[in-house]
Amino acid sequence: MPRSTPPAGVAATAWPSATASVDEIAAPPDLPISAAEIGAEPMPPLAPPEPPYQLATGGDPDSVTNATLQLRSEYGDLWTRIRQGFILDDLDTPLVKKAEEWYAARPEYVARMVDRSRRYLYHIVVEVEKRGMPLEIALLPMIESAYNPMAYSRSRASGIWQFIPSTGKLFGMKQNWWFDERRNVISATDGALDYLQKLHAEFGDWYLALAAYNWGEGSVRRAIAANQKRGKPTDYLSLKMPAETRNYLPKLQAVKNIVSDPERFELTLADMPDAPYFTVVRTKKKMDVKVAAELAEMPLEEFLSLNPEHNRPVIAGADEATLLLPYDKAELFAAKLDLTDQPMVTWQAYKFRAGETLQQVASRFNMPLETLRTVNGIGPRAKVPVGHALLVPSQAPSDATVASLQNAVFTTVPSGRSFYHRVRKGETLASIAARYDVSTQDIKGWNAGLAAKLAPGQRLHIVSDAGPVRAKKSKRGRKTQAASAKPAAGKSSGRVKPTSAPAGRARAAHR
Image (cartoon, rainbow, N blue to C red; front, side):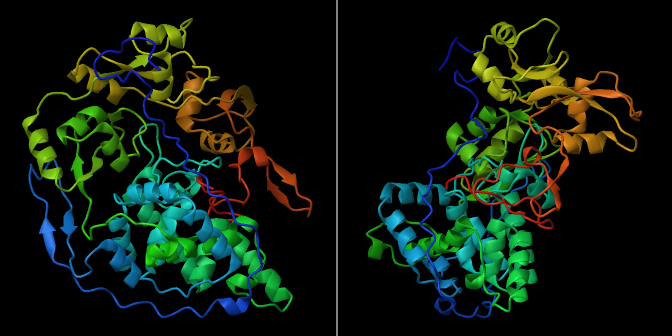
């Protein structure tokens, strides 16, 4: 709620939060499934025929590059295309029936999920087909996030594919103060499909690969080893696994059944054209998110639904920005951008001063305190150190405002406790940052004049939610990471790193 009238370019309410949950889906009870109810995996399909191409043109190719659009018409609509790409044997179990009943009883939920998916589904279908993967996988974000790009779980999993920070980085998704590519549909889809292909290559079975995507391949590997030791089968249905993972594939099967025959469940799926919704544009110009939306003549909410990776109201943080725009808006955006040679940033950097409060800063720049906190990622309990760079509004776009953003070092202010770390022999700035789940820039910001080389015994000021990562003995006598230093796992261990033991993504945001 606005507390004062903001200046031009500053929303009266807080900047859209990067953490948004989706409707929760109740996990059906853990019911037994017999191994006879699942068949052998079929051969992968033949590659689809090459589609005709249509170019999205317009604008200076040096400043904006539009991606090639692939237009296909042989399927009629996207739902038909998806149905024809289903290749996995069906599950027909009580858990599937429970999930079907859940969706059928919530037509409004299904309608919202389908409406969100219309922006991204064509792109994902094309990418899945390129790799010869089952098109059931294109429905997986409906289970992970209900196709909400802002979905964020307690384990810090983010985006429609629900990657936690470490796995996102491992699969090439950059995450910094300005943006988080786990929410970028192109980057996250590439990472998710790479991960699923890696899992399928290891386990040789799509059901095991999908279970590992939810539970972590280390957990699936150990479950297989345990069954092998006991002389038991090692297929998906024979493995012992947590309830969330046991319900994971039945939920996917339920969505598949609904897509295959919505009338059977008295549901209606909105029309889904078999054509691209968006195209990619690239620009080196820094600009307000609001300005970019205006150039494309789009509502801000719609622009953010295609570009949810931006943490701040300014598109910055990289030499080149990649934007997704409806393909019928790309040419307009390019033309308007080429005609604009004025600065398009109405935000500037401001250094927090000694004895100053955030309320005073907010009042100085005529903006609500809540907006100042949200724009800068500052929690309600966080303490801002002196000299910390804040993003604040300027009076008007200028070269000086752009320069201030380029020259300032922006860091996130953790909302956790503040303490001191005594440097041990062999420790580096990077290893200490990793230990407390912060960045090296954060540590430099909290410790003015910090030398590049640390000395044993040196004290460093640290502010962190995670607390130090220390090894402790588990009940089985093995060393494990302290629970306080890893993402909360909800009801399953979470996807942490594809090469580690209980890895995975933890609990999806909508469950």
